[in-house]
Image (cartoon, rainbow, N blue to C red; front, side, top):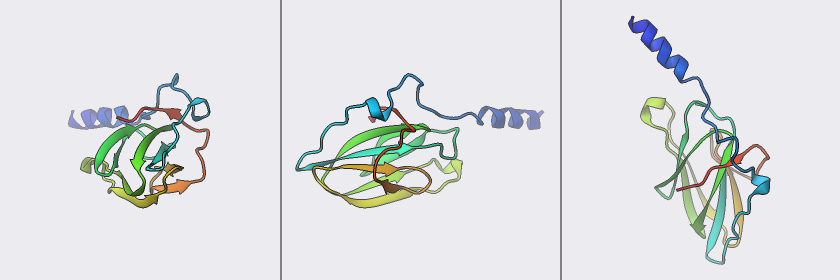
Length: 133
């Protein structure tokens, strides 16, 4: 009986955490302009394991979103050094990943949250908008 319960739980976890299908794509969104004191950080997640879970993202130790697959969000940060962390719960079995970087004022930065966190030139057309907290 215990084995059947475990199998049912595992099957229930095999779905994918994704953005709502009616959420707007990046190409139709108006992202605000950065200022001389701030930077805009557009963060996006493609289909990234573990796909069944929303990815917890912190900016400067503040949780800003639990982002699903195939989605993006944006945050305004102070210009200068900032830290973006993917902080999975311990039971997921994946260690936290952090990007510490200098975010230039008056600029929009694109950050790919897949596995390791890294900068991109722009956002791929993969993603639907999910608002940050």
